[in-house]
Amino acid sequence: MAQEITTNQLRKWLLAYAARIIENEDHLTELDTAIGDADHGVNMRRGMGKLQERLRDEGHSEDVSAFLRSVAMTLISGVGGAAGPLYGTFFLRAATSPTNGSSIDLEQLTQMFRYGLDGLQQRGKAQADDKTMIDTIQPAVEAMEAALAAHQSAAVVLAAARQAAHLGMKHTIEIEARKGRASYLGPHSIGHQDPGATSAYFLFETAAEVFTITGAD
Image (cartoon, rainbow, N blue to C red; front, side, top):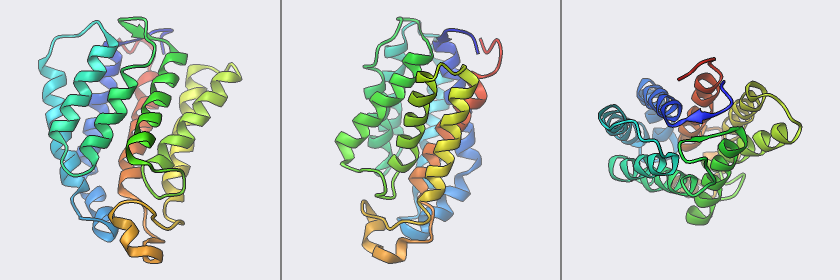
């Protein structure tokens, strides 16, 4: 990965994320059928289609904050159910993190994810072990911060985030839901992977893939 992550690289990441969600629509629906409204897959797929249109149609914005706000507004309007406001909040708060204007560095990318996480927790009031997307995002952000503090390379930082996100996603199988519709099931929610945690995992999976490609611009 280049020292600076440009808006164009962020665009490539989110296009890859949208494609990954669309590829996994049936899987997300299956997960949500077990403990939710069975609509996470279709809602996310619909929203990702809107995001692809926005990212492909608009000019290449030079401002990272403006780009992230545009992404947030697209997700809020395009993704149905609870996921739209949550993902929208994540990117709206990420847009308020420090940038270099037209690019961000690895530390700023980590801060971007931290700001997004903080926004989600303030909006949804969810914490770790509530069986939500927080169980994926929080350990991933903490892993990035730890690897960055240890002066690891970008590839190591992003790989650490991906691994932690994956472990967090799988951890939701073992715990009881305490937020959202799944919480109505009580102990019966144990044994099922959370669909929101799964769609959130793809954020870090695709980030690790896209941002570690040399010359991603």
